[in-house]
Amino acid sequence: MSAICFENVSKKFGDSKIIDDFNLTIERGTVFGFIGPNGAGKTTTIKMLTGLIKPTTGSIKILNQDISNGYQILDHIGYVSEESNLYNYMTFQGILNFAKGFYTNWDPSLVDKYTEFFRLPLNQPIKEFSKGMKVKVSLVLALAHNPKILILDEPTSGLDPIFRREFLNVLVEEMTQSEKTIFFSSHIIDDVERIADQIGIINDGRLLKVRDMDELKTNEKKIRVVFQRDIESEFFDFPGIAKVEKSDNAYILTVSENFEEIYQRCKSKPHFTLDVIEQSLEDILINTSGR
Image 1 (cartoon, rainbow, N blue to C red):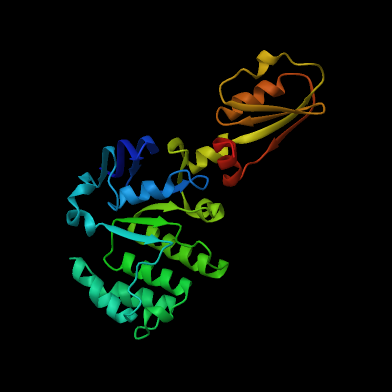
Image 2 (cartoon, helix red, strand yellow):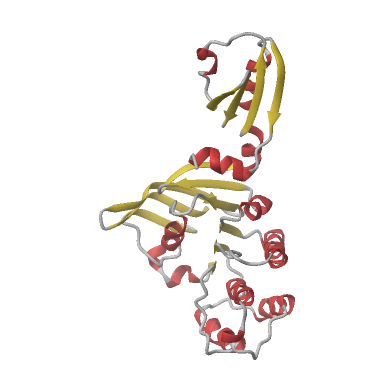
């Protein structure tokens, strides 16, 4: 049984189609990194996934249950976003007392564990918490009922590197101990690259690519080659060569798949130099989205 499934999902606001024919299946135990440029449709997708807004067409299922079932799937989901929806007039303890009434599997031992880990004061009003502390509170609330799926929408945006590392360490621990499924959207690509084992790239409301991280790293690279003589243009007409640039005497190939075949194809031609340029996840995002 898959953890998350989008089938033919589209979302329109007025005449504007924000999400277009979105299809995605995420298996249980996956850390799914969801990336794209600003305005690509990431937050709209997550709002549909959490039931905050409804898709115009298509269906979304979590653990084989339609998200329209509401409270039937609430116990299975933990959600953290950049925006704090906490009641500022309450203390942290008051927030905990309020939240636990919504879940049948609330675990006080998990609350104690993460409250101590994040050094959060129970009796201090939320309005006195910093942005980072509020994100920590949201993460405690998201983990307190031991959900099977964590949905994270820009959770560490604007926060310092020390807290971001703490946050990611908690996610890694959760994956190690309980094999949760994590849907992680962030514009801090290094954070996604550190923990994700599968990547989805969205742009202009369309899901352009879904690949295992290992597959991305193996296939998505650049090749810089200086041939000994002119090469016919048909040589570059090969599956997996996404882009060809020429700089002086060098050809720079952006490769999106079939890397080994393309490398050997270049190697077979007489050449002066042949170099492989490794690509970061940020490079791959830019190559894919064209931004």
